Image (cartoon, rainbow, N blue to C red; front, side):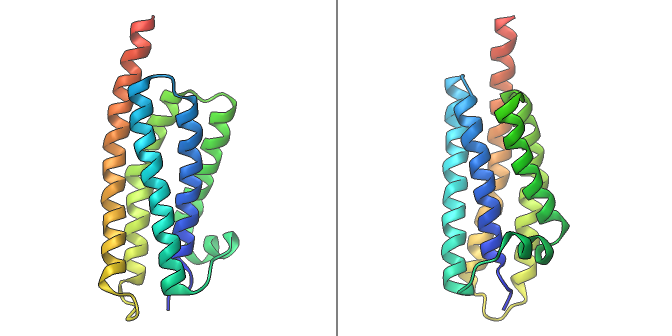
Length: 164
């Protein structure tokens, strides 16, 4: 059995959810907040689904340290990125800058990471079609999140441009 892939993925979704929570709170434009709220709620749902998958398939949870060593560089980079971006947002980073950075995060790290995890467990006999389907759905959601962020960036840019 793959050690605690689902638990580790749930931890990554949790860090991402916390980042979106801060971004949502900091955003002022109502339309941007709607898009960020949608992404935030879907990210929370991803976390909850992955936590349930961890309970059902793994019967264990991964520690942050074990996840970083077991899941590899991409996982560690994603966790550092989510946490550091959250800290930057709490200090001085603008909503627009954060959303632009998150577009790349969702496109490159999010999708590749979920697909990498899917590939890692794809050969495990005890992982069934339901688990594979759920991971594919989460990966598809990551693409939609990037599209939503692109729209939010356009709206925020227009809003800032009209203020000047």
